[in-house]
Image 1 (cartoon, rainbow, N blue to C red):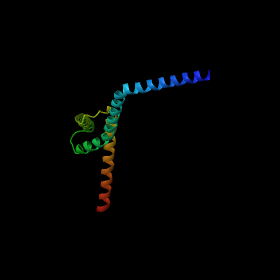
Image 2 (cartoon, rainbow, N blue to C red):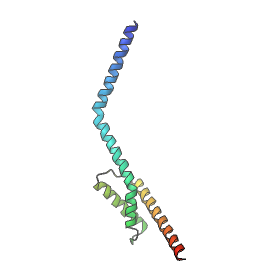
Image 3 (spheres, rainbow, N blue to C red):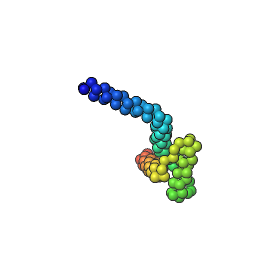
Image 4 (cartoon, one colour):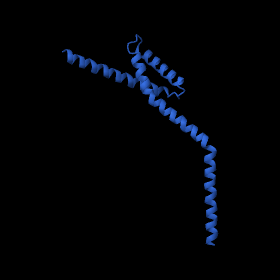
Amino acid sequence: MDNIVMDIAAVVIAIVFSYAVFWYKKHKTVIDKKKSEGDALAFSLDILGKLASVFSYDLKDSSEKGTAKKKEVATKIKSSLADAKLPIPSDAAISGAIEKAVTAMKLADDEEKSDNDVKNG
């Protein structure tokens, strides 16, 4: 009786394992595609801050007001990511990156001014 239970358990385990392997092989392309999309989005988010900094500095001395500058920077970021065929993050993420870049730019300008004041005065 114990041999029959062991044999049945072995067969059930083999069937479950075989089905799991079959399911994985069948869905492997979908899994790999989602993984590559996730990697591309992570790369887009990583490069987002760099693009925001570059474009914010480019428009620093522009005659436009803050909101118009922010909109133009967002447009340039979306265009750059689209040209690179990368996923475009949400508007909130882009807005946050722009605000962070502008804050860093202002802090750097304030620090540079205070360094010049110390040297000159």
